[in-house]
Image (tube, rainbow, N blue to C red; front, side, top):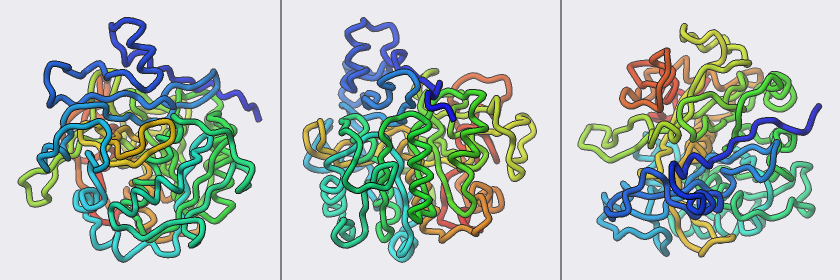
Length: 423
């Protein structure tokens, strides 16, 4: 098996026509997103986290963005003064997300005995401490190594020989851990850190997570498709009885891997805002520009799973389901490694993938021979159908434009309780 993975995704386009200096800031995770209006303090600005730019050829990118200014949907709803980092949250917290997705009761009652694995690259030395800050602030039960709830290992399962630390991937790790905690606070968390962001190492970490007993595995990374993807499918993602979720990507319309794997649940992204509807929330496709928004598309390589029945794509279609990802309607995260310690607001499909993994955990252990990606297709009425917005231009409308029923950017919709994620 080759170890050099050709899925490389650069994020220079985020600087648009700005000067090279602005582009460099973006690559450092410090720039302002191209859509931002600096003259208006209410406009939300954000930047790709540093891990969204691969360090070298062959590495994959994380799918997260960090808010740097402006007024988020959470701040607007609560009359909070805009701050990029704060001692108190500036994005949606657990009660918001549970309310939006009909999970208030399930989050309180379900998840005990389940283990949700987070697979990321490199080491976050502050992962457990930052997780404790988040959970303590929101009144969630402690999840520590000492009480057996939290465990951090390398891709080989070692608790002592961990990868080198990386500030960019540490932001991603904090986002993933906090989203799992928000949705399934009673579940155990297993963090598996790959030694680098190649598919070979991240895939090995997925296999390790499964071997250590996780029935739910979240992956918030991706890159361009390649002809090697079908072999990666069989080597890393073919795990019956395990719900594996993968971010659909943050670069707008276009398929990426491993979201295109036929064995995983590919997770798109939405903009989530409070509303006067009976649900109390409204969602649309997350799109910032033609080059930023949720991913979607028809795979060039992966075969179509039997449960996916859309007729415009003869191969695997991305996505299956979706959840909040728009940074302007972003989620609260506590982080301290390589940044000023405090609460930040994050977006990207790196938020939606762990949310959906945690919903699967609330729904219960998958059938031993099942690929849980098929479950939502059997329960389409138990999802919030997202019918507005698009993530770019495409020749087949539903590949990039939301509508009634299935569409690429949001799949079958977003959770409304746990029914759609059960056998």
